[in-house]
Length: 390
Image 1 (cartoon, rainbow, N blue to C red):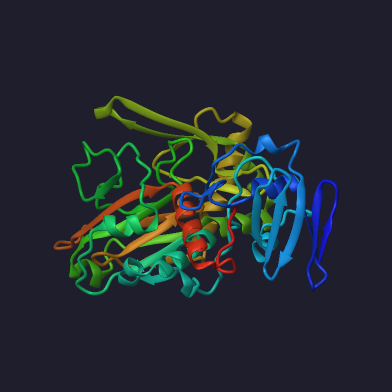
Image 2: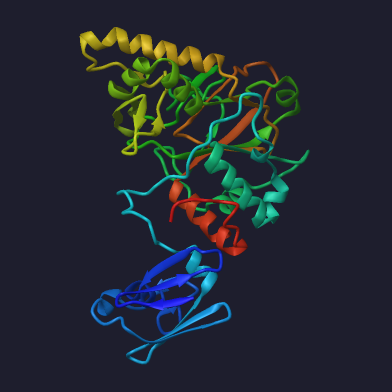
């Protein structure tokens, strides 16, 4: 049922719901070939030209299509189900900044089956990529398991997920293999055990998503689980601490520490001062930061030092006891992708004779992964499969 008003159209659905659309909004939403490039999804005109004269001459509903003939003679057509999906009735002003998909806590018993995928299926199926990105945004971690004896170029799966990598000091990507510790750019390039950490915390902001890919892992490394990577959902641990010990949570979210890395061969020293727990404008946890090898307590006041150490110790003990963990035993061509803002990762020592564990790592910007997911959501019209901000 249609009802024309001076500045808006009112549509009533059989289920009783009522939606209102300003004439101005309807005019700028026209997607005819004169107004809109359907391939690039971009408008040809500046909608401000209609701010004073977006007036309809006729409005006709026929089947699932709403047609409007404007006073200047232009004809616009709209799918009714599309209007309903894009209704803005009742919505308040959106907050500043881009919203993030709501993070879900990991369950206590085991990670959802939905985070595990077969690499070969992901290389062939857009639907698998769509489901994988959905799980990544929700739980912060996905795993692509390669078939035995698979040989796959790592760039293929990277291109399937997001294409453009987030370049860092190390380049588009970095290869993790043992190097001389006296000259290495990072303690990660060794066979030593690495504690749970955030990557590149000395950037402001640090990379959003990270991946590791098994370039070459021999059978001995796989069978002995040497160099397995452990992943912990820091978000769940932080929220549990907030619920049971708010004072420690507050301290970690208010007192900044210094994350620093020196690269003498490049004449650089990076620094980023921030709290271990960062709270967003909506009051929710926005990012976690913890890298023991690169974290320093410079400029922490005398009265804050012991409370900060005690809160940090509490947090790390909770992480070590956490059941919200996943340990990945590497094989060649395996790939794990995770949200570097909430997931901490570390590894076991792998200095046993004969063990070869050669991984490739790199980073994705969230905007690249979101853009891929939006395209796939539109392709499959899977509004019920993925909900993320526009």
